[in-house]
Amino acid sequence: MTNSKYTSCMKTAIVSFLLILNVVQMDAQEKDTIPSAPNKKNFIIVETACGECQFGLPGKGCHLAVRIDSSAYFVDGTDIDSHGDAHADDGFCNAIRKARVQGTIVNGRFKITSFQLLPTASSK
Image (cartoon, rainbow, N blue to C red):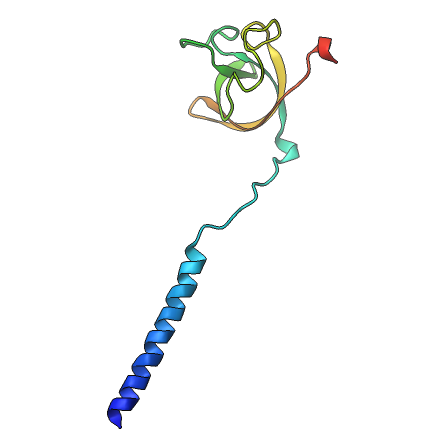
């Protein structure tokens, strides 16, 4: 009789352990998250262009940059080719444009969380 009580207790313990393990495993799975919308209060209007061609930043090639308070920063989070032909007349290598952006300066680079190129005066 002692043996059957022991077996019953062990079965209960094993089932309880497996249930707890299952709950922990389900909680540890990655959850789908919806990215939060950019905070409207943190947008700024900046000048944007090719860092090398228009802002005189060091480097080889053409890379998107922004100018904030007369300091230029290369951009991470979007690139020069994502916003049209950089070598067109109104492209980033030939013109300085305005953009509505949100982000932070980290290690001398501007980490973009939102980038909206504003229309030029001729395209309004």
